[in-house]
Image (cartoon, rainbow over all chains, first blue to last red; front, side, top):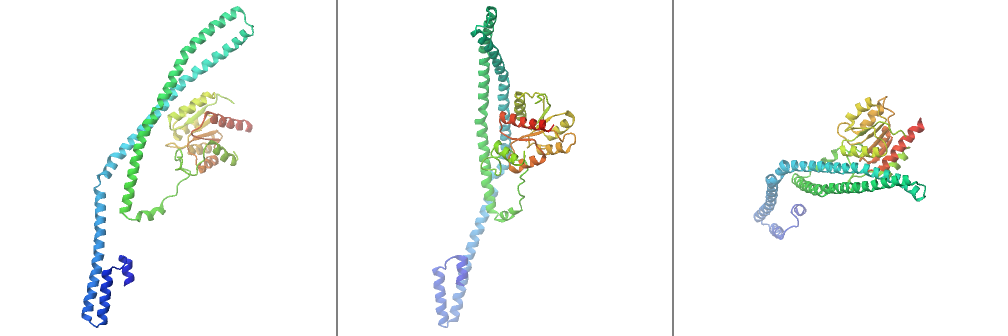
Length: 251
Length: 130
C-alpha cells in the first residue's frame, strides 16, 4: 500500500501516516468498528486527492485545446501570411532576375567598348614604336598623329560610357538589401509556424513522434538545388572536389 | 577546336542561360541556342544537329539528368558531348551523372576559367578518340 501510494502521489503525507498509525493502534486495541471507520476515511482521502489531480489535468488540457482553437493567429497564418509569403518570395525572384539582367546588359554593352579600346591601342602602339625607332616618314607621322587624336577623343567618349555602365552594375546590387529584408520576414514567419506546430504536437501527445519511422528515406539523387552550408550534408565543397571525385571514377 | 559548332544551352533560369551564352561567346562560340528544360531541349536536339549540350540539372518538366539519359538512349544522339552545369553537388548525384555518361560536370557558382577548362577537356577527348 505504501509503495503504491508513493508511486502515484509522491511521498506519503503526514496526514496519511498519522491516520495509518491511529488505524494500527485501533486494530491492536480490538475496536473493529472504529478501525473500519478509519479505513473508510483513509480511502476517501485517497480518492479525493486522485480526483483533484484528475480534475486539474482535465482543466489544463481543456484550456490548452481551447486556447489553441481560439488562437486566431493560426487561422490568419494559413489564410493570409502564407499566400503573403509566397508573393514576397516571388517578388524576390523577380527582383534578383531584374538585377541580373540590368547587370548583364551593362556588361554586354561594356565588353565591346573594352575590345575596341584594346584593339585601337594595340594598333597605335605598334605605330608609335616605329616612330620612336625613327622608322617613320613624315607623311606616316602626320597620319599617326591624326589617328592618335581620334583615339584620344574616342577614349574621352568611351570612358564616361564605361563609368556609367559600372555605375549601373553597382546600382543593380541594391536588390540585396531589399530581398534580404523580405527574406528575413519570411524566415520570421517560418519560425512562428514552427513554434505553433511544436505546441500542437505537445497538446496532441506523443503519437506523431512514434510514426516518424515510417518516413521515406531521403532520395539522394533527386535535385534539391544549391546546398546550404550547415544544412545540407554529403555535398562536395566546390569544383576541385567534383574534379577529384570524377577523376577517381576514371574521368 | 572548331568554334562554329552548334551548342544548346538548357537552363530554366533565363539569367543563367544568358551568362553561359555570354561566356561561350567570349570563348569564341557564337552558334548557340537555348531551351528552358529537357522537354523542350530533346526535340531540338533530335532535329538540330547540335554538337554540344550544356545543361542544368534541376529544372521543371524534364530534369537535366533525365535529359542526359534520354540523349544516351537515342542512337542518333548517344555520342553528343554533354556538359552539366548545376548547383546539385551531392556526391551521389555526381556519381549518378558520371554513370549516365556525362562528359563534364561544373558546379555553380562557376568561373569563366572553369567553363573554358572543361570545354577544352571535352574537345581534347573527342579529338583523341577520332
